[in-house]
Image 1 (tube, rainbow, N blue to C red):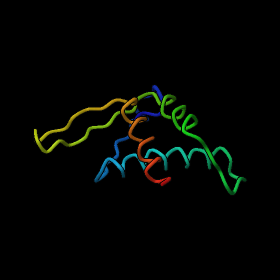
Image 2: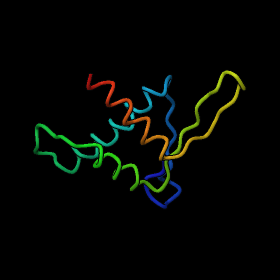
Image 3: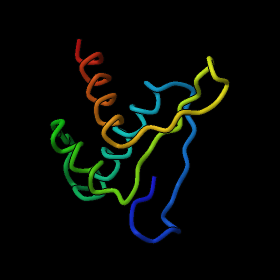
Image 4: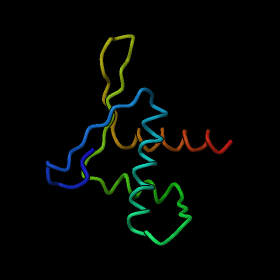
Length: 93
């Protein structure tokens, strides 16, 4: 993840699963919302808001380990948005 065009804003995160990584994306957005709105106790957002956050990042991608090739496959922000939506739908059930 890179939050701005400044390369020093580049950050790497490691998760044990895709689900945990998508939860991490949501947690990053929720943290930003709390920073912007420190006086609000309850903050809600919809998928469009989350997508705007993801699209507003200078760079976001995922490297996912594939056991069949014993290597990492790269995925872009559109894939991340789709997987985040799937994760949120699963959690809503």
